[in-house]
Image (cartoon, rainbow, N blue to C red; front, side, top):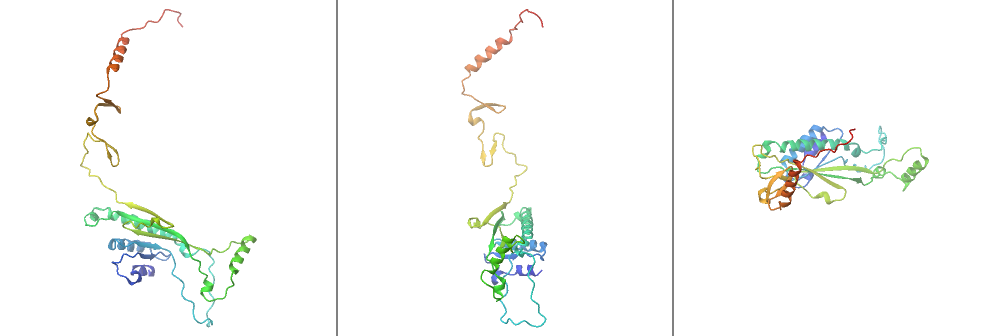
Length: 269
């Protein structure tokens, strides 16, 4: 729960009325239900502040001034996994974001949320991915490391074909949720997607019979104003169209119906 406690505190000691984004780190030990609850409360109480969810670990502490080892201390073992915590917690981050979006949309689409003056219209998601700058932990601790020793060792592993080199870059994923558009989609490596509140049509209201909806936002004019007399199977007949040829064709067809053609007498098959 320490992650939640750190997330609820205002960033940089600023008040909640500021429009600066608030950052919340998703860890493997935190509760998903607590993350979702805090995010929903934050978006309701601060509709003009974005919420940034990420898995980036804090910077390492500064190296100690004294390098003399004390009694009972053992050197820390290097991690066996080549994956960083920021990468391992990425699926957890995506799950938390999807739960927040679903719960938030259900809340703002309820009838109770439509009674206030400021009505929420949707939620915007800005996804940013990239690589963090490489930090050599051994150099940060003050240990002496030769210039390209790690690079040469990794190259030898690749050429030898025994093991894979250790991953030195740190990929990250950062998702920002906002109740209003921020315009960040023009940034490099940032994608935007949003979910809007669905409009509900009144059930009792019936559209007029002489108006037909063609496409969303487009309404056809009444048929009488278009000079159409009859509509038969989607065929529109104009009043002013010449009908002399049609009458002549009907008469010729009617005269042929009364004539019965006799078969010529011949050999029967």
